[in-house]
Length: 199
Image: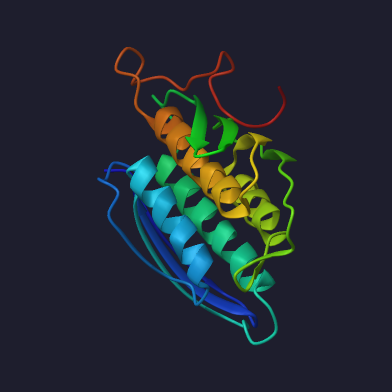
């Protein structure tokens, strides 16, 4: 089983994360930020990654540190669980509709982190959460997971639908990319024989 546990402790946050990439989408998430909890539950459910997150942060200041550090910790856990990435499909993509909204997400588990973020919001907040923090979460996750990640909202009006379709799209594309290809389960999916470094 491809599993990992991470503890990240700073003066701003204390976070414990565990993942099972070959799970069934079971989750237990507590970050102190209700909307972020909801998004991470979607990530687990639609990727089939079993996910446990326990986070305490300086939310009395704002939600920035907890959001970013949660992305880092989950990304680090996924990266660790992937190991040498032998046998993975490597690429995944998803088009996710949610009512009036459609988002497109593509991922390459290349071990070369990069984020393209083409998502705009019409409001500065969703509940108590600043909408600008969603890019910070995706950036932190991509960097720590070693993923090239493209996130694009093609159209939409409702900000809740827009961000939720992005998390669900990440989940579906990640699920596809981390699947073991039975025809090449013993090989890293690269002509270099390793993932990361130069193109």
